Image 1 (cartoon, rainbow, N blue to C red):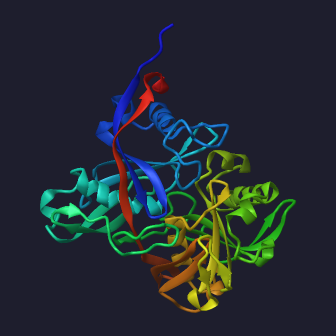
Image 2: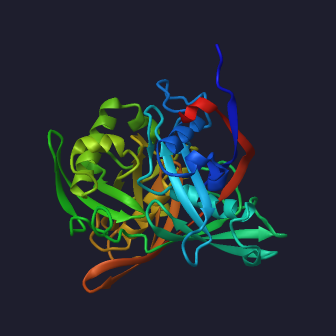
Image 3: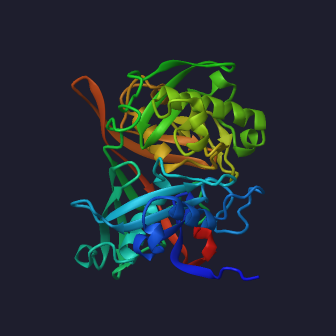
Length: 396
């Protein structure tokens, strides 16, 4: 009996923000996987080690969490005035699908670094010493992102003293600007798809809640912690160990996705795990983070807990942080009210691993709220580079 040999594909394993993923150059992929479709999805599933009924991804590069079951495909940009096209695939852990419906804000921090190191940014745009501004076209959501990457002696500087809660070791700071992060109406309507900054949201057999539905960074449903029975200080085990609570959140998320116009029937949410996100907010409270760090009420403007791929996130998704910053900048949203209300251009929020500051510039134009950009700092580092190997018949 004969068996298919393994094929090897150039790849880089990188941390970006509080996530990790496998990065590829588009033209390094097998020819059949250079186009969107079944072969590409099969390749990425096998690389990450999904679907895995054990939920461990032992036979792949995934780390058995939404933060580590990620893939990125990069190419020289097809768009004018951009350096690199960035396509993100969120790989399901126990199901055979890749979700292409949104961006990963954390891995965005690694895109600029990878692009510089792999010849996707023109050499004349890279300083010998200083900051290289990388213009990224986020292909999933059709948006521009600017990464400010430190360069030393012509090489990406990865080490430094910037600390990010949720990441063990310090590294070089990479500032990220999400330009015009709100949805422009292509999918799910405008920034506030219901037309309101707060809605009364009824979920059959669960309850009626106040909710802010927003398309900024990533489609997100914000709820008040107290209305759904939480304090806002919860860590992962308090929710991820409660199957009933997770099922309840998923039902709320499915009805929220329909309310936002992202799906037509709630059953479609099962195949759209990456978006929308669901999060709950509360006013500042003291708590101890997952690392043992004490967070005081004076350290933060509000608390936020968010779920990704059906589980409470260990820190905060970068795209959800954009949604938080945007919602905080607009008076009357649940996020803004939890932070004390009024006009603001930045917030520091508490999450399970610590705190994070995010800024957003919001203005009213013709009676509608418009967000020009959201800004946050992250870090990135190459963990390993070379080749990944998968059985050749994985592509069949």
